[in-house]
Every structure is written in structure tokens, then in C-alpha cells.
Image (cartoon, rainbow, N blue to C red; front, side):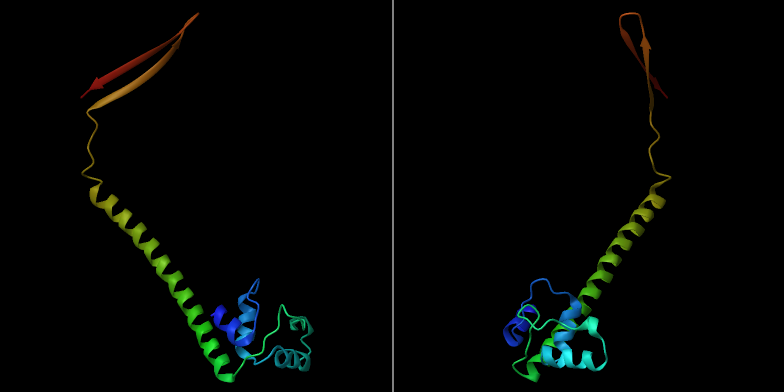
Amino acid sequence: MQAYAATHAGIDPKGKDIYYYTDVGNYNTIYEYNDQKLRYRQYASLYPDNEVYFWAWDSDASRKKFDGLRYDSQQLLHLASFALGGLIVNRIVSMIDVIALTKDRLEIPVSDVQTLLIPQRNALTLSLSIGFK
């Protein structure tokens, strides 16, 4: 999408956000965009007339194709987010299911291990106690 706009509209894709690409897809030139923003007195939305923000489509068909690519790209990004969320939820539900199905099958330990540190005057004694059931 960005390469297509760079080729057919002459944009510089570095540091641009999705709002810039939306504007590029909706207007043939930066001048059309800025003129409309001036008519509606939306001065904060104007792009500076320089090479960093400049665009001029080589044809209306190219602009429309780019806008379609941009829209499809956004839709696929949303779809990927939902798919990732679904995979995470599936994993959590599977873990809960496994825990619920195997909680009665867990092995009971056959031994009981206890440790005790006993401080002495010049030493430390470790006491290990293992009880079998």
C-alpha cells in the first residue's frame, strides 16, 4: 500500500500515520485536501506544502485502487487481531478443561519431605526428615 502510494502519488512514507494515508486515499492532491480544510476552517488539519507531506495522484483510478488497498489492509489487521484473541481464549479454555478433567487423577505423593535448620554455636545443622505413606 505504501509502496503503491509512493509510486503513483509521489508520497514520502516515512513517519506517516494511518490518518495521512486515509487523506491521501480520499483526495487527488494535497492542494484539494488543504482547500477543503480551509473552506471548513479546519486549520489544525492542514498539511504543510512541502515535500514531506506532498502527494499528487497520477490518475483517479490509481487513487481509488490505493484506497481499496488501504481499506483491505485495515480490515485484515482487524481480522488478525480477532484471530489472535481467539487463539488466546482457546488456549485458556483448553487449560481450564485439562485441569477440570484431571483434578481427580492427580497422584498423591508417597512421601513427605521436611527440612529443618538447627543453629549451633559454631555450625549449622540441616535435618532432613522423609516420611513414607
